[in-house]
Length: 455
Image (tube, rainbow, N blue to C red; front, side):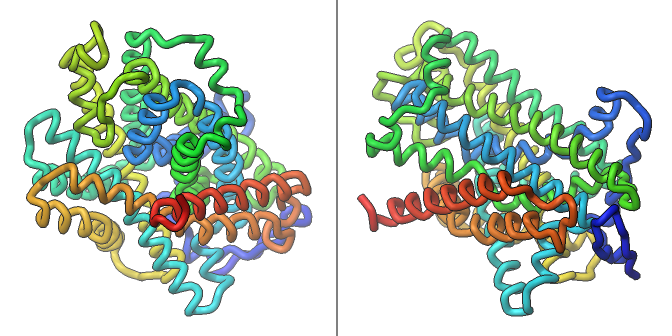
């Protein structure tokens, strides 16, 4: 069943039988004539789920190591990366609101079968790669907090897909509230630890100003590439284009569409600002506590133990700091796995139109993600050091997968045929293509360095 809609020059066709995340699509009503703050509150939520992808466990070690090695100088990289992420996520949300379809659906419709299947496989592997960090982070957090064997912790984390099934029956607002609570835990934990570490405020402010040394210093450039390369996650672009449609939208009126775009973009930008704060706190913590020390910070366990070692972090060292770190790690892993599973469903439905029960779709996506982690865990007998090496491989693959999501997004949102009057303007087109080329270039450079072709 298809519906043609004409929005003051915007013409597009929506297949009402294949809505993105059909069970929650348009399920949340928004006030029509309310004030600014009440309306913003009604639209607040999807941005929180998007933001967790920018503060998942995969970013932690990189950010803290950046502070430990170069003090506050890489804060500028976090700032620039966050601004690019805000722009791309705003475009992703706009695509879903205007067309009534998510990025996977539109890409699938506008490519032939071989290309569509190839893009689907890349997207599924990218979600698996993203989920690797989240599952490993949660499993290690359970081990650090409760002495649960790593293999058991990974299995517990994998089972949280069942929790998502229950939450979906309770309504999407419940999912948004739970993820928001987990994000609040992360922010409060690191804000508290940073306050205790007494960082230099002048050093922090100077750190947000880019310097030429970021490019000329080889080691600093490499770590900067790692931070930038891990910022924009392919699955978040698919997710944003879908969950922006959870609010009820009257597409028969262009003003209503513009209003939805405005408030959804505000929500996304506000929540990504929270992610920016978290990543800044991580780097500041690394700078304040570990700069100038000889401590090894290559693994989550290293960070956990370092926070209770007075020889490394001084007088503020305590088991409580270590416990708080592990709690934040668990909160980060759990919130990210929820969004990863939703992304898996979006990609599967959009590209291959798989008609199976929703619980089967979610089970398949989670099994696809957890299988490589379980294989590593069994093979290495729960050695978290070896298992965390899988994180490196996952980030490398994300570097490869990113162009397959970001290029279609820029092309589609710049097309007047698809977006009508809401197509990207000239300035946004230029900025988005510059950001795309820079992100892809940096990811390729990082990939070549990782595999040893560039030294």
